[in-house]
Image 1 (cartoon, rainbow, N blue to C red):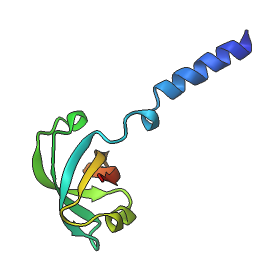
Image 2 (spheres, one colour; image 1 turned 90 degrees about the vertical axis):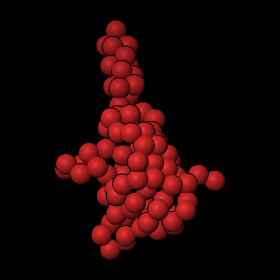
Image 3 (cartoon, one colour; image 1 turned 180 degrees about the vertical axis):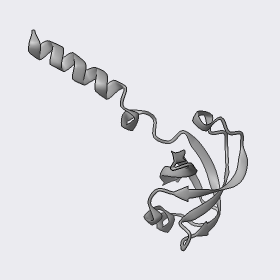
Length: 96
């Protein structure tokens, strides 16, 4: 009984885990990269979890190394969230 209960609790924790949720909730086009500042300007579609409409804006990036993988004009899928009050790109992948 205890093993079954433990398995159920573990499964529920995984299902509710933000890390397992869809990690790329928006898409956009890179307009400008500012590596020294760790920022990227993007023309993006709606970001539902932040209640944002489509627009062009500057984002911070959680990991500055992400900026090495893209250039102006690249299409990307990304996840953004508020980190210490700033809207920040958490994950980002170039669309092929």
